Image (cartoon, rainbow, N blue to C red; front, side, top):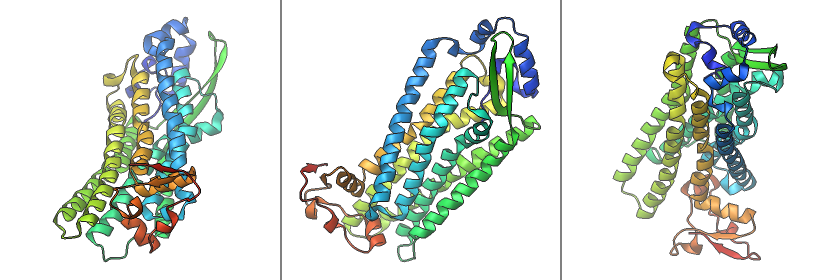
Length: 375
């Protein structure tokens, strides 16, 4: 979805050009009074609320996902197919928290793009990159789990194949963002009443129909299709586990892993669906979503969507025994995970065992460090 600027000054369905918008601004006698009629951000309290929420998500999302990336990269025991996709998902969230969200927030609050022409063509089109990266990474994790559990005797994806898949995802993501880069327009002007230079960075499509077709296509490719395929794979996985006569310990371990991964899928869907529906509605019925609360709702739904970046590290980090163990080693502690009946208090991941070909008990303890128990 594009960032709609000065949005009550014109109806986007009429396909008003940037020049028309600037003419409207230049003809306004009292800009601040007019601005208070089309946005609640003329009042500082609304800005404070939004900035506070964004600061929490940006700071926590950055450090939590950065920690996930560091732990996975540092310890070879975590170099598995699933963790490669999780690491890529975390890197995408880190980039969004550091690079994209602060620029988007400032732009929509100030209606002034002060970051130059180059960032205009880089920052705004990449807002959808984490969405596409997350949905495809989650899908590929489901595919890997599907092959491991439903077809256990077939050769599964290797780490190198997983890395190549990540590269392909990046290429596809950039390709899908290309139309936004092509139709972005950067305009600078001096407002005669405000006596300051302002700049706009917004989409200028050849026709409104073209923009609608692109929006629907992105919604289907980035969200609907990956989530539907992922749901199908996990439904089949759960069915197989319920009916497979295997050891109770293996069944419990696989079910625990799948519950964590399914929770990641549900978190992604619940967090991103409201903003996607809002964006799609704005493209087809601007009358329904327009008003002085439009930008406020847009920003709140975006920060709610990005809250998944704060929840995911907890789901695939703190709820994973192997990750907690390696995280403890990073900070100089020994984490004793799992039930007391397991050898050394450690639960062994089937995925880790398959990838590494051995157990991890030799790596479990740092004898010269104090012990900390995590249940």
